[in-house]
Amino acid sequence: MDELRLLFRYEFIQNAVLAGLLASVLSGLVGTFVVVKRLVFIAGGISHAAFAGLGICFYLGLNPLIGAVAVAVVAAVVLAWLGEGGAGRSQDAYIGILWAAGMAVGIVFIHMTPGYAPDLMVYLFGDILTVTRNDVYLLASLVALVLLIMMLLYKEFVAVAFDETFSRVQGIPVRLLTMLLLVLVALSVIMLIQVVGIVLLIALFTLPPVVALMLALRSFTLVLLVAVLLAMLMTSGGLAGSYWLDIPSGPAIVLFGVVIAALVRIAVWLRSRLRSGVPGM
Amino acid sequence: MSVLELGRDCMLEVRGVTFGYDGEAVLQNVDLRIGQRDFLAIIGPNGGGKTTLLRVILGLERPWWGQVHWYHRPSRGRIGYVPQFSTFDRNFPLSLEDAVLMGRLGQRGPLRRYHREDRLAVARVLERLKLADHARSPIAELSGGQMQRALIGRALVAEPEILFLDEPTASVDAETRTVLSALLQELNTRIPVVVITHDATSIAAQVKQIACVNRRLWYHGSGELTNEQLEEAYGCPVELIAHGVPHRVLGEHSHSHHGH
Image (cartoon, rainbow over all chains, first blue to last red; front, side, top):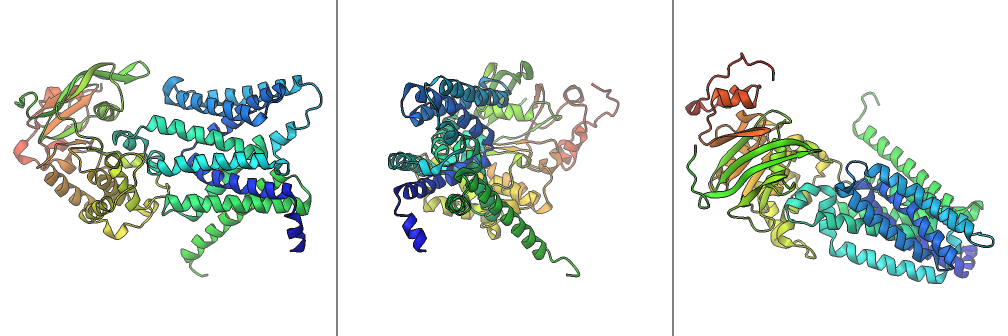
Protein backbone atom coordinates (compact mmCIF):
# COMPACT_ATOMS: atom_id res chain seq x y z
CA MET A 1 0.00 0.00 0.00
CA ASP A 2 2.81 2.37 0.91
CA GLU A 3 4.49 1.63 -2.36
CA LEU A 4 1.28 2.53 -4.18
CA ARG A 5 0.98 5.83 -2.31
CA LEU A 6 4.57 6.59 -3.16
CA LEU A 7 3.94 5.81 -6.82
CA PHE A 8 1.00 8.20 -6.99
CA ARG A 9 3.27 11.06 -5.93
CA TYR A 10 4.82 10.93 -9.38
CA GLU A 11 3.01 13.17 -11.82
CA PHE A 12 3.53 10.78 -14.73
CA ILE A 13 1.75 8.06 -12.79
CA GLN A 14 -1.12 10.43 -11.97
CA ASN A 15 -1.32 11.43 -15.64
CA ALA A 16 -1.29 7.82 -16.75
CA VAL A 17 -4.12 6.83 -14.43
CA LEU A 18 -6.19 9.89 -15.34
CA ALA A 19 -5.65 9.32 -19.05
CA GLY A 20 -6.63 5.69 -18.61
CA LEU A 21 -9.85 6.56 -16.81
CA LEU A 22 -10.79 9.26 -19.32
CA ALA A 23 -10.09 6.95 -22.25
CA SER A 24 -12.21 4.30 -20.54
CA VAL A 25 -15.27 6.54 -20.60
CA LEU A 26 -14.98 6.83 -24.37
CA SER A 27 -14.04 3.24 -24.86
CA GLY A 28 -17.22 2.15 -23.07
CA LEU A 29 -19.60 4.73 -24.54
CA VAL A 30 -18.45 5.04 -28.13
CA GLY A 31 -17.15 1.47 -28.27
CA THR A 32 -20.58 0.05 -27.46
CA PHE A 33 -22.08 1.85 -30.45
CA VAL A 34 -19.15 0.71 -32.59
CA VAL A 35 -19.82 -2.91 -31.60
CA VAL A 36 -23.62 -2.96 -31.95
CA LYS A 37 -23.51 -0.99 -35.22
CA ARG A 38 -20.71 -3.24 -36.52
CA LEU A 39 -18.35 -0.34 -37.15
CA VAL A 40 -15.24 -2.08 -35.81
CA PHE A 41 -13.49 -2.20 -39.17
CA ILE A 42 -14.37 1.46 -39.80
CA ALA A 43 -12.92 2.41 -36.41
CA GLY A 44 -9.74 0.54 -37.36
CA GLY A 45 -9.60 2.39 -40.68
CA ILE A 46 -10.03 5.77 -39.02
CA SER A 47 -7.33 5.12 -36.42
CA HIS A 48 -4.79 3.99 -39.00
CA ALA A 49 -5.67 6.85 -41.33
CA ALA A 50 -5.01 9.20 -38.41
CA PHE A 51 -1.39 8.13 -38.51
CA ALA A 52 -1.00 10.21 -41.69
CA GLY A 53 -1.94 13.39 -39.83
CA LEU A 54 0.32 12.39 -37.00
CA GLY A 55 3.29 11.94 -39.33
CA ILE A 56 2.71 15.20 -41.19
CA CYS A 57 2.52 17.23 -37.97
CA PHE A 58 5.57 15.43 -36.65
CA TYR A 59 7.43 16.50 -39.80
CA LEU A 60 6.20 20.09 -39.50
CA GLY A 61 7.17 20.19 -35.83
CA LEU A 62 3.56 20.67 -34.65
CA ASN A 63 1.74 18.71 -31.96
CA PRO A 64 1.12 15.36 -33.71
CA LEU A 65 -2.22 14.90 -31.98
CA ILE A 66 -3.66 17.94 -33.78
CA GLY A 67 -2.87 16.38 -37.13
CA ALA A 68 -4.28 13.07 -35.97
CA VAL A 69 -7.56 14.71 -34.90
CA ALA A 70 -7.91 16.55 -38.23
CA VAL A 71 -7.24 13.51 -40.40
CA ALA A 72 -9.37 11.19 -38.27
CA VAL A 73 -12.38 13.50 -38.49
CA VAL A 74 -11.98 13.92 -42.25
CA ALA A 75 -11.64 10.15 -42.64
CA ALA A 76 -14.80 9.63 -40.58
CA VAL A 77 -16.80 12.03 -42.75
CA VAL A 78 -15.48 10.46 -45.97
CA LEU A 79 -16.31 6.95 -44.72
CA ALA A 80 -19.79 8.02 -43.64
CA TRP A 81 -20.34 9.45 -47.10
CA LEU A 82 -19.03 6.30 -48.79
CA GLY A 83 -21.34 4.28 -46.58
CA GLU A 84 -24.33 6.19 -47.92
CA GLY A 85 -23.99 4.60 -51.31
CA GLY A 86 -21.44 7.06 -52.65
CA ALA A 87 -19.20 4.11 -53.43
CA GLY A 88 -21.73 1.41 -54.08
CA ARG A 89 -21.07 -1.75 -52.13
CA SER A 90 -17.33 -1.44 -51.80
CA GLN A 91 -17.11 0.62 -48.61
CA ASP A 92 -15.26 -2.30 -47.09
CA ALA A 93 -12.51 -2.11 -49.69
CA TYR A 94 -12.22 1.66 -49.38
CA ILE A 95 -11.71 1.31 -45.63
CA GLY A 96 -8.83 -1.05 -46.38
CA ILE A 97 -7.28 1.47 -48.76
CA LEU A 98 -7.66 4.31 -46.26
CA TRP A 99 -6.15 2.09 -43.57
CA ALA A 100 -2.96 1.31 -45.51
CA ALA A 101 -2.61 4.70 -47.21
CA GLY A 102 -2.83 6.49 -43.87
CA MET A 103 -0.08 4.35 -42.41
CA ALA A 104 2.09 4.78 -45.52
CA VAL A 105 1.80 8.58 -45.51
CA GLY A 106 2.56 8.69 -41.80
CA ILE A 107 5.64 6.49 -42.09
CA VAL A 108 6.99 8.46 -45.08
CA PHE A 109 6.71 11.79 -43.24
CA ILE A 110 8.29 10.42 -40.08
CA HIS A 111 11.07 8.96 -42.22
CA MET A 112 11.66 12.40 -43.83
CA THR A 113 11.83 14.10 -40.44
CA PRO A 114 15.47 14.92 -39.75
CA GLY A 115 17.04 13.18 -36.82
CA TYR A 116 15.95 10.21 -34.76
CA ALA A 117 12.22 9.51 -34.46
CA PRO A 118 11.85 7.78 -31.11
CA ASP A 119 8.13 8.45 -30.76
CA LEU A 120 7.00 6.18 -33.59
CA MET A 121 6.67 3.12 -31.37
CA VAL A 122 4.77 5.13 -28.81
CA TYR A 123 2.06 6.02 -31.30
CA LEU A 124 1.85 2.54 -32.73
CA PHE A 125 1.74 0.61 -29.47
CA GLY A 126 1.03 3.31 -26.92
CA ASP A 127 2.87 4.29 -23.80
CA ILE A 128 0.51 5.71 -21.27
CA LEU A 129 3.45 6.76 -19.06
CA THR A 130 4.47 9.42 -21.59
CA VAL A 131 1.13 11.26 -21.29
CA THR A 132 1.66 14.85 -20.09
CA ARG A 133 -0.61 16.97 -17.91
CA ASN A 134 -1.57 19.02 -20.99
CA ASP A 135 -2.56 15.82 -22.78
CA VAL A 136 -4.78 14.99 -19.81
CA TYR A 137 -6.50 18.38 -20.09
CA LEU A 138 -7.00 17.86 -23.83
CA LEU A 139 -8.42 14.40 -23.16
CA ALA A 140 -10.73 15.73 -20.46
CA SER A 141 -12.19 18.39 -22.75
CA LEU A 142 -12.70 15.88 -25.56
CA VAL A 143 -14.43 13.52 -23.12
CA ALA A 144 -16.69 16.35 -21.97
CA LEU A 145 -17.59 17.16 -25.58
CA VAL A 146 -18.39 13.53 -26.44
CA LEU A 147 -20.43 13.13 -23.26
CA LEU A 148 -22.43 16.26 -23.99
CA ILE A 149 -23.28 15.19 -27.56
CA MET A 150 -24.18 11.69 -26.39
CA MET A 151 -26.47 12.99 -23.67
CA LEU A 152 -28.28 15.43 -25.94
CA LEU A 153 -28.90 12.89 -28.71
CA TYR A 154 -28.96 9.70 -26.64
CA LYS A 155 -32.40 8.37 -27.57
CA GLU A 156 -31.77 9.10 -31.25
CA PHE A 157 -28.40 7.33 -31.21
CA VAL A 158 -29.92 4.25 -29.58
CA ALA A 159 -32.87 4.21 -31.98
CA VAL A 160 -30.63 4.51 -35.03
CA ALA A 161 -28.37 1.76 -33.70
CA PHE A 162 -31.37 -0.53 -33.15
CA ASP A 163 -33.37 0.17 -36.30
CA GLU A 164 -32.17 2.63 -38.92
CA THR A 165 -35.12 2.20 -41.26
CA PHE A 166 -37.72 2.77 -38.57
CA SER A 167 -35.84 5.84 -37.35
CA ARG A 168 -35.85 7.28 -40.87
CA VAL A 169 -39.59 6.72 -41.18
CA GLN A 170 -39.95 8.54 -37.85
CA GLY A 171 -38.21 11.53 -39.38
CA ILE A 172 -34.88 11.15 -37.57
CA PRO A 173 -31.89 12.49 -39.58
CA VAL A 174 -30.18 9.10 -39.68
CA ARG A 175 -27.38 10.04 -42.08
CA LEU A 176 -26.40 13.06 -40.03
CA LEU A 177 -26.40 11.03 -36.81
CA THR A 178 -24.33 8.26 -38.38
CA MET A 179 -21.80 10.80 -39.54
CA LEU A 180 -21.76 12.40 -36.09
CA LEU A 181 -21.22 9.01 -34.49
CA LEU A 182 -18.23 8.39 -36.77
CA VAL A 183 -16.81 11.80 -35.83
CA LEU A 184 -17.15 10.81 -32.17
CA VAL A 185 -15.37 7.56 -33.04
CA ALA A 186 -12.59 9.62 -34.64
CA LEU A 187 -12.20 11.86 -31.59
CA SER A 188 -12.18 8.85 -29.29
CA VAL A 189 -9.59 7.12 -31.44
CA ILE A 190 -7.18 9.98 -30.82
CA MET A 191 -7.51 9.58 -27.09
CA LEU A 192 -7.09 5.86 -27.22
CA ILE A 193 -3.95 6.28 -29.34
CA GLN A 194 -2.40 7.87 -26.25
CA VAL A 195 -3.28 4.95 -24.07
CA VAL A 196 -2.75 1.81 -26.13
CA GLY A 197 -1.54 3.05 -29.51
CA ILE A 198 -2.97 2.80 -33.02
CA VAL A 199 -2.42 -0.92 -33.46
CA LEU A 200 -4.00 -1.99 -30.17
CA LEU A 201 -6.73 0.59 -29.65
CA ILE A 202 -9.34 -1.53 -31.38
CA ALA A 203 -9.16 -3.72 -28.26
CA LEU A 204 -10.46 -0.89 -26.09
CA PHE A 205 -13.32 -0.34 -28.55
CA THR A 206 -14.34 -3.98 -28.59
CA LEU A 207 -13.42 -5.81 -25.37
CA PRO A 208 -15.39 -3.75 -22.80
CA PRO A 209 -18.60 -3.56 -24.89
CA VAL A 210 -18.46 -7.23 -25.86
CA VAL A 211 -18.08 -8.28 -22.22
CA ALA A 212 -20.81 -5.81 -21.15
CA LEU A 213 -23.14 -7.30 -23.76
CA MET A 214 -22.53 -10.74 -22.27
CA LEU A 215 -23.60 -9.46 -18.86
CA ALA A 216 -26.55 -7.19 -19.60
CA LEU A 217 -29.31 -7.51 -22.16
CA ARG A 218 -32.14 -5.61 -20.57
CA SER A 219 -31.08 -2.04 -20.99
CA PHE A 220 -28.78 -0.25 -23.37
CA THR A 221 -27.89 2.33 -20.72
CA LEU A 222 -26.82 -0.45 -18.38
CA VAL A 223 -24.60 -1.92 -21.10
CA LEU A 224 -22.94 1.48 -21.53
CA LEU A 225 -22.30 1.80 -17.79
CA VAL A 226 -20.93 -1.72 -17.45
CA ALA A 227 -18.72 -1.19 -20.49
CA VAL A 228 -17.26 2.01 -19.03
CA LEU A 229 -16.55 0.28 -15.71
CA LEU A 230 -14.97 -2.70 -17.46
CA ALA A 231 -12.77 -0.37 -19.52
CA MET A 232 -11.65 1.34 -16.31
CA LEU A 233 -10.84 -2.03 -14.79
CA MET A 234 -8.95 -2.96 -17.95
CA THR A 235 -6.83 0.18 -18.13
CA SER A 236 -6.02 0.44 -14.43
CA GLY A 237 -5.48 -3.31 -14.05
CA GLY A 238 -3.35 -3.40 -17.18
CA LEU A 239 -1.34 -0.44 -15.93
CA ALA A 240 -0.71 -2.16 -12.61
CA GLY A 241 0.23 -5.36 -14.42
CA SER A 242 2.67 -3.49 -16.64
CA TYR A 243 4.33 -2.09 -13.50
CA TRP A 244 4.57 -5.33 -11.54
CA LEU A 245 5.55 -7.51 -14.48
CA ASP A 246 7.68 -4.86 -16.17
CA ILE A 247 5.99 -5.17 -19.58
CA PRO A 248 4.83 -2.36 -21.95
CA SER A 249 1.55 -0.75 -20.81
CA GLY A 250 -0.39 -1.01 -24.11
CA PRO A 251 -0.10 -4.79 -24.50
CA ALA A 252 -0.60 -5.25 -20.74
CA ILE A 253 -3.97 -3.42 -20.92
CA VAL A 254 -5.09 -5.38 -23.98
CA LEU A 255 -4.06 -8.77 -22.58
CA PHE A 256 -5.67 -8.06 -19.21
CA GLY A 257 -8.88 -7.26 -21.11
CA VAL A 258 -8.66 -10.51 -23.06
CA VAL A 259 -8.30 -12.44 -19.79
CA ILE A 260 -11.37 -10.68 -18.34
CA ALA A 261 -13.38 -11.43 -21.49
CA ALA A 262 -12.40 -15.10 -21.40
CA LEU A 263 -13.27 -15.46 -17.71
CA VAL A 264 -16.66 -13.77 -18.13
CA ARG A 265 -17.45 -15.89 -21.18
CA ILE A 266 -16.67 -19.06 -19.21
CA ALA A 267 -18.73 -17.85 -16.23
CA VAL A 268 -21.73 -17.07 -18.45
CA TRP A 269 -21.44 -20.47 -20.09
CA LEU A 270 -21.22 -22.24 -16.74
CA ARG A 271 -24.24 -20.37 -15.42
CA SER A 272 -26.36 -21.29 -18.42
CA ARG A 273 -25.26 -24.94 -18.02
CA LEU A 274 -26.24 -24.93 -14.34
CA ARG A 275 -29.55 -23.21 -15.04
CA SER A 276 -30.59 -25.64 -17.71
CA GLY A 277 -30.09 -28.33 -15.05
CA VAL A 278 -28.28 -31.08 -16.87
CA PRO A 279 -29.98 -34.36 -15.83
CA GLY A 280 -27.90 -36.62 -13.64
CA MET A 281 -25.84 -33.77 -12.24
CA MET B 1 -62.47 -0.05 -60.18
CA SER B 2 -62.99 1.78 -56.95
CA VAL B 3 -64.39 5.25 -57.33
CA LEU B 4 -62.12 7.46 -55.29
CA GLU B 5 -62.51 11.12 -55.76
CA LEU B 6 -59.09 12.58 -56.17
CA GLY B 7 -57.89 14.50 -53.16
CA ARG B 8 -60.90 13.89 -50.96
CA ASP B 9 -60.91 10.28 -49.98
CA CYS B 10 -57.45 9.66 -51.25
CA MET B 11 -54.61 9.76 -48.74
CA LEU B 12 -51.74 9.18 -51.09
CA GLU B 13 -51.10 8.39 -54.70
CA VAL B 14 -48.22 6.61 -56.37
CA ARG B 15 -47.92 8.02 -59.87
CA GLY B 16 -46.03 6.19 -62.59
CA VAL B 17 -43.22 5.11 -60.30
CA THR B 18 -40.28 3.27 -61.77
CA PHE B 19 -37.51 2.26 -59.40
CA GLY B 20 -34.90 -0.43 -58.98
CA TYR B 21 -31.43 -1.27 -57.84
CA ASP B 22 -28.16 -1.36 -59.79
CA GLY B 23 -29.80 -0.13 -62.99
CA GLU B 24 -32.38 -2.93 -62.93
CA ALA B 25 -36.01 -1.87 -62.54
CA VAL B 26 -37.83 -3.65 -59.73
CA LEU B 27 -40.95 -1.54 -60.15
CA GLN B 28 -42.13 -0.41 -63.57
CA ASN B 29 -44.59 2.41 -64.07
CA VAL B 30 -46.56 1.64 -60.91
CA ASP B 31 -49.75 3.54 -60.11
CA LEU B 32 -51.60 3.13 -56.85
CA ARG B 33 -54.02 5.11 -54.75
CA ILE B 34 -54.61 4.56 -51.08
CA GLY B 35 -57.86 5.89 -49.66
CA GLN B 36 -58.60 7.12 -46.16
CA ARG B 37 -60.37 3.93 -45.07
CA ASP B 38 -58.65 1.43 -47.32
CA PHE B 39 -57.50 -1.95 -46.08
CA LEU B 40 -55.10 -2.78 -48.84
CA ALA B 41 -53.26 -6.05 -49.20
CA ILE B 42 -50.21 -5.87 -51.42
CA ILE B 43 -49.51 -9.38 -52.60
CA GLY B 44 -47.13 -10.86 -55.10
CA PRO B 45 -44.29 -13.33 -55.52
CA ASN B 46 -41.04 -13.01 -53.60
CA GLY B 47 -38.70 -10.56 -55.29
CA GLY B 48 -41.67 -9.05 -57.09
CA GLY B 49 -41.10 -5.63 -55.54
CA LYS B 50 -43.63 -5.53 -52.66
CA THR B 51 -41.15 -4.32 -50.06
CA THR B 52 -39.47 -2.01 -52.57
CA LEU B 53 -42.82 -0.38 -53.30
CA LEU B 54 -43.30 0.14 -49.56
CA ARG B 55 -39.84 1.71 -49.27
CA VAL B 56 -40.69 4.12 -52.08
CA ILE B 57 -44.00 5.07 -50.44
CA LEU B 58 -42.25 5.63 -47.10
CA GLY B 59 -39.74 7.94 -48.78
CA LEU B 60 -36.81 5.63 -48.06
CA GLU B 61 -36.07 5.38 -51.78
CA ARG B 62 -36.32 8.11 -54.39
CA PRO B 63 -38.04 6.83 -57.54
CA TRP B 64 -36.21 7.06 -60.87
CA TRP B 65 -39.39 8.26 -62.50
CA GLY B 66 -42.77 9.20 -61.17
CA GLN B 67 -43.61 10.35 -57.67
CA VAL B 68 -45.45 9.62 -54.48
CA HIS B 69 -47.96 12.31 -53.73
CA TRP B 70 -49.56 12.65 -50.29
CA TYR B 71 -52.92 14.38 -50.26
CA HIS B 72 -52.86 14.28 -46.47
CA ARG B 73 -49.32 13.99 -45.27
CA PRO B 74 -49.16 12.64 -41.72
CA SER B 75 -47.35 14.91 -39.30
CA ARG B 76 -43.85 14.03 -38.15
CA GLY B 77 -43.59 10.58 -36.61
CA ARG B 78 -47.19 9.67 -37.46
CA ILE B 79 -46.51 7.10 -40.16
CA GLY B 80 -46.92 3.66 -38.62
CA TYR B 81 -44.40 1.19 -39.99
CA VAL B 82 -44.01 -2.45 -38.98
CA PRO B 83 -40.95 -4.00 -40.66
CA GLN B 84 -40.33 -7.70 -41.16
CA PHE B 85 -39.13 -8.92 -37.80
CA SER B 86 -36.77 -11.49 -39.26
CA THR B 87 -34.42 -8.69 -40.28
CA PHE B 88 -33.69 -7.71 -36.67
CA ASP B 89 -30.71 -8.08 -34.42
CA ARG B 90 -32.58 -9.82 -31.64
CA ASN B 91 -29.56 -9.63 -29.34
CA PHE B 92 -29.69 -5.86 -29.15
CA PRO B 93 -29.76 -4.96 -25.44
CA LEU B 94 -33.23 -3.51 -25.03
CA SER B 95 -36.26 -4.32 -22.95
CA LEU B 96 -39.55 -4.80 -24.76
CA GLU B 97 -40.81 -1.61 -23.15
CA ASP B 98 -37.86 0.47 -24.35
CA ALA B 99 -38.12 -0.94 -27.87
CA VAL B 100 -41.79 0.04 -28.07
CA LEU B 101 -41.01 3.46 -26.60
CA MET B 102 -39.03 4.25 -29.76
CA GLY B 103 -42.35 4.67 -31.51
CA ARG B 104 -42.62 8.05 -29.75
CA LEU B 105 -39.31 9.21 -31.17
CA GLY B 106 -40.67 11.27 -34.02
CA GLN B 107 -43.13 13.19 -31.89
CA ARG B 108 -40.72 13.91 -29.08
CA GLY B 109 -38.13 15.40 -31.40
CA PRO B 110 -34.40 15.62 -30.83
CA LEU B 111 -32.82 16.98 -27.63
CA ARG B 112 -35.94 16.02 -25.65
CA ARG B 113 -36.31 13.19 -23.23
CA TYR B 114 -39.24 10.80 -23.24
CA HIS B 115 -42.10 11.98 -21.01
CA ARG B 116 -44.37 10.21 -18.58
CA GLU B 117 -47.16 10.31 -21.13
CA ASP B 118 -44.92 8.42 -23.56
CA ARG B 119 -44.47 5.64 -21.02
CA LEU B 120 -48.20 5.58 -20.29
CA ALA B 121 -48.92 5.26 -24.01
CA VAL B 122 -46.50 2.33 -24.14
CA ALA B 123 -48.19 0.65 -21.16
CA ARG B 124 -51.60 0.98 -22.82
CA VAL B 125 -50.37 -0.48 -26.09
CA LEU B 126 -48.62 -3.39 -24.34
CA GLU B 127 -51.86 -4.15 -22.51
CA ARG B 128 -53.77 -4.11 -25.77
CA LEU B 129 -51.27 -6.46 -27.37
CA LYS B 130 -51.21 -8.83 -24.37
CA LEU B 131 -47.56 -8.07 -23.77
CA ALA B 132 -47.82 -6.28 -20.42
CA ASP B 133 -46.34 -9.26 -18.55
CA HIS B 134 -43.19 -9.09 -20.64
CA ALA B 135 -42.63 -5.33 -20.48
CA ARG B 136 -39.26 -5.66 -18.74
CA SER B 137 -38.07 -8.71 -20.66
CA PRO B 138 -35.11 -8.31 -22.97
CA ILE B 139 -36.23 -8.57 -26.58
CA ALA B 140 -33.76 -11.45 -26.97
CA GLU B 141 -36.07 -13.58 -24.80
CA LEU B 142 -39.28 -12.93 -26.75
CA SER B 143 -40.88 -15.49 -29.03
CA GLY B 144 -41.35 -14.68 -32.69
CA GLY B 145 -44.99 -13.82 -32.16
CA GLN B 146 -44.23 -11.61 -29.16
CA MET B 147 -41.53 -9.80 -31.10
CA GLN B 148 -43.92 -9.26 -33.99
CA ARG B 149 -46.49 -7.79 -31.60
CA ALA B 150 -43.79 -5.60 -30.05
CA LEU B 151 -42.99 -4.15 -33.49
CA ILE B 152 -46.69 -3.51 -34.07
CA GLY B 153 -46.85 -1.89 -30.63
CA ARG B 154 -43.95 0.38 -31.56
CA ALA B 155 -45.88 1.52 -34.62
CA LEU B 156 -49.07 2.03 -32.61
CA VAL B 157 -47.64 4.19 -29.81
CA ALA B 158 -46.89 6.74 -32.51
CA GLU B 159 -50.69 7.11 -32.89
CA PRO B 160 -50.24 6.70 -36.64
CA GLU B 161 -52.40 8.28 -39.31
CA ILE B 162 -51.66 5.41 -41.68
CA LEU B 163 -50.27 1.96 -40.92
CA PHE B 164 -47.96 -0.13 -43.10
CA LEU B 165 -47.13 -3.72 -42.15
CA ASP B 166 -44.53 -5.81 -43.95
CA GLU B 167 -45.34 -9.54 -43.64
CA PRO B 168 -46.95 -9.23 -40.19
CA THR B 169 -48.20 -12.81 -40.13
CA ALA B 170 -45.07 -14.60 -41.26
CA SER B 171 -44.36 -17.40 -38.79
CA VAL B 172 -46.40 -16.14 -35.84
CA ASP B 173 -48.48 -18.02 -33.30
CA ALA B 174 -52.27 -18.28 -33.12
CA GLU B 175 -52.56 -15.77 -30.26
CA THR B 176 -50.72 -13.15 -32.27
CA ARG B 177 -52.92 -13.79 -35.31
CA THR B 178 -56.08 -13.35 -33.28
CA VAL B 179 -54.89 -10.20 -31.53
CA LEU B 180 -53.59 -8.78 -34.77
CA SER B 181 -56.71 -9.46 -36.74
CA ALA B 182 -59.03 -7.73 -34.23
CA LEU B 183 -56.61 -4.86 -33.82
CA LEU B 184 -56.24 -4.13 -37.51
CA GLN B 185 -59.98 -4.22 -38.03
CA GLU B 186 -60.48 -1.70 -35.25
CA LEU B 187 -57.68 0.56 -36.49
CA ASN B 188 -59.13 0.50 -39.97
CA THR B 189 -62.26 2.25 -38.77
CA ARG B 190 -60.03 5.31 -38.33
CA ILE B 191 -56.95 4.98 -40.54
CA PRO B 192 -55.90 3.23 -43.73
CA VAL B 193 -54.07 -0.07 -43.27
CA VAL B 194 -51.64 -1.44 -45.85
CA VAL B 195 -50.41 -5.00 -45.44
CA ILE B 196 -47.70 -6.59 -47.49
CA THR B 197 -48.08 -10.33 -47.43
CA HIS B 198 -47.37 -13.47 -49.33
CA ASP B 199 -50.02 -15.23 -47.22
CA ALA B 200 -53.25 -13.34 -47.68
CA THR B 201 -55.37 -15.93 -45.85
CA SER B 202 -54.38 -14.71 -42.40
CA ILE B 203 -55.88 -11.28 -42.94
CA ALA B 204 -58.31 -12.01 -45.74
CA ALA B 205 -61.42 -11.25 -43.70
CA GLN B 206 -60.51 -7.57 -43.39
CA VAL B 207 -59.00 -6.92 -46.79
CA LYS B 208 -60.97 -4.49 -48.91
CA GLN B 209 -58.54 -3.89 -51.73
CA ILE B 210 -55.86 -6.02 -53.31
CA ALA B 211 -52.85 -4.92 -55.28
CA CYS B 212 -50.68 -7.52 -56.90
CA VAL B 213 -47.08 -6.48 -57.49
CA ASN B 214 -44.65 -8.20 -59.76
CA ARG B 215 -42.59 -5.43 -61.30
CA ARG B 216 -45.86 -3.96 -62.53
CA LEU B 217 -48.91 -3.48 -60.34
CA TRP B 218 -52.42 -4.85 -60.80
CA TYR B 219 -55.02 -3.25 -58.62
CA HIS B 220 -58.49 -4.31 -57.74
CA GLY B 221 -60.69 -2.25 -55.50
CA SER B 222 -63.15 -4.96 -54.62
CA GLY B 223 -60.58 -7.58 -53.82
CA GLU B 224 -61.17 -9.43 -57.04
CA LEU B 225 -58.65 -10.00 -59.70
CA THR B 226 -59.27 -11.71 -62.96
CA ASN B 227 -57.48 -14.92 -63.74
CA GLU B 228 -55.59 -13.23 -66.51
CA GLN B 229 -54.32 -10.49 -64.22
CA LEU B 230 -53.29 -12.95 -61.57
CA GLU B 231 -51.55 -15.25 -63.96
CA GLU B 232 -49.73 -12.39 -65.53
CA ALA B 233 -48.55 -11.18 -62.14
CA TYR B 234 -48.06 -14.36 -60.27
CA GLY B 235 -47.66 -17.91 -61.18
CA CYS B 236 -48.09 -18.96 -57.54
CA PRO B 237 -50.98 -20.15 -55.33
CA VAL B 238 -53.39 -17.27 -55.58
CA GLU B 239 -56.39 -19.38 -54.56
CA LEU B 240 -55.28 -18.82 -50.97
CA ILE B 241 -56.86 -15.40 -51.04
CA ALA B 242 -60.31 -16.84 -51.53
CA HIS B 243 -60.22 -18.95 -48.36
CA GLY B 244 -62.21 -17.33 -45.61
CA VAL B 245 -63.67 -14.77 -47.94
CA PRO B 246 -66.66 -16.68 -49.27
CA HIS B 247 -68.54 -13.55 -50.22
CA ARG B 248 -65.70 -12.39 -52.34
CA VAL B 249 -64.73 -15.42 -54.28
CA LEU B 250 -61.82 -15.15 -56.56
CA GLY B 251 -61.83 -17.17 -59.67
CA GLU B 252 -60.39 -20.62 -59.17
CA HIS B 253 -56.71 -20.52 -59.83
CA SER B 254 -56.08 -22.45 -62.96
CA HIS B 255 -53.32 -24.93 -62.38
CA SER B 256 -52.46 -25.00 -66.02
CA HIS B 257 -50.18 -22.00 -66.07
CA HIS B 258 -46.75 -22.65 -67.39
CA GLY B 259 -43.50 -21.48 -65.93
CA HIS B 260 -42.64 -17.87 -66.44
